[in-house]
Amino acid sequence: MQEYFTISRFEAGDLDPTRFDHEAHIYVAWLYLREYPRDVALASFDAALRRLTEKIGATSKYNAMITWLFLLLIAERMIASEDWAAFRARNTDLFDDQPRSQAA
Image (cartoon, rainbow, N blue to C red; front, side, top):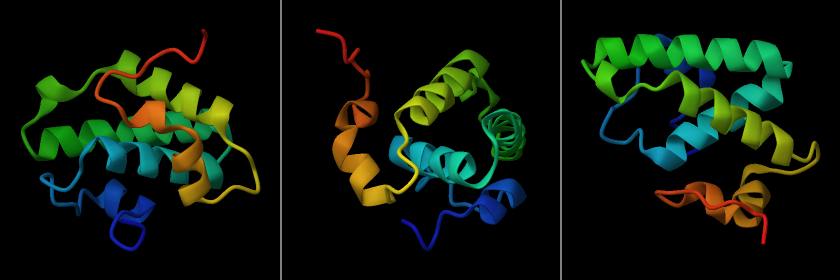
């Protein structure tokens, strides 16, 4: 995943839509949040996702609220020194089809 999904490929829309699943969305969002300040990452990821959904004819799948909420949740859970594997292992609920609240 890490070799295929990059910010530059995402922004260029150079991704196979059949491979861009929920986990790939989270991974690319995580990349943005590691690379840019939170507000820049949110706006940049959102704009690139809109372009991608338009390019592949999937605009009905785009939801701004879900996009922003997921990015904010990812940002809140990130640890600066943590790599992707550690983040993924620690946040398995984000990868469910219907994420659960971490509150008991």
